[in-house]
Length: 354
Ligand code: ADP
Image (cartoon, rainbow, N blue to C red; front, side):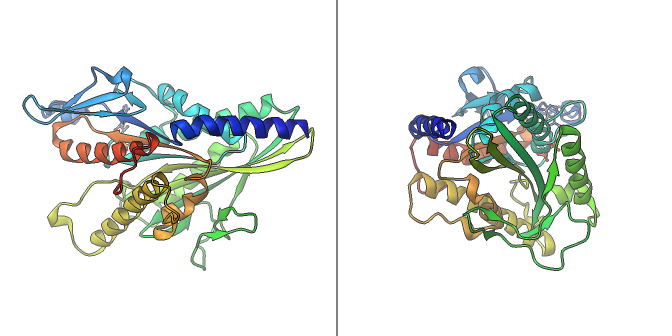
């Protein structure tokens, strides 16, 4: 029992520290100007002078500058390893029994997918996370036995799609609460993975399935939330105690507002659903901050799915992605405002509306 007591003690201590600091971290990452932006002469409007202190400045035209403060600010020079290094403590806490959620928020084209998925040469958070989980599980194999499984979901127009399913589900996929309290989606594939190679193959399969049935893959993925769930089952080999924890890695739909000419038909419905789920996410975080008795998790599929990993003693990390270009100024400021309100939660500066 000693080991479980030790873990319980560590958790308690950690919770005390967290309570003082809050459970939501907000990191801001700015992508480089694209080749096209450079060739068409777009100016960068982001000032990184105080980036080391977590500050980012936005030139609002002329000499006016608006500053925002986050837990970390990554300039276009920072690489994938820099971002992962700061996310890593959250990832490893999943192996200690915490539920965790890491999500990338921002306008389409700002690097959400680059940060989360990355490329084969430039691996993102998803790959690095799995790699580290397997590495630590191996290091601890004399005291713990870990089992990892992966599910890959997409939420599009408030409908959940299982990207690992071999055939389309005949039943509508819904979030349910299991007897032990965990939320899950009955019927979805939970692929057991034993090493990084197997895990990567599963992620690739999920990614490929995303494009099936859509005419324009990029457009489709910018309008849906891509959600990777890693379930960790741990058995303490000393006292036999078993625990289960969950890590969500989420590439959110683009947060941009529509231009008036776009607002029609299917596109309007998509946009309303995206707005609804992103504001639901803000509302949940806000309700948690004000210690509201009712946390409105059920207002969107996104928040309902994330329920176990938002609130309680779980830990969340928001990566707000922005563009440096003057052309995106409006969306950039709007993303930074949203992220600042989310971060206000951490400082205990709860605001009513997020
Ligand atoms: P989103 O998922 O937000 O729509 P993407 O991840 O598709 O955005 O990024 C848009 C483009 O910008 C891609 O070509 C991507 O490779 C590039 N990009 C994004 N962030 C970075 C970065 N930090 N460094 C280099 N290229 C980046």
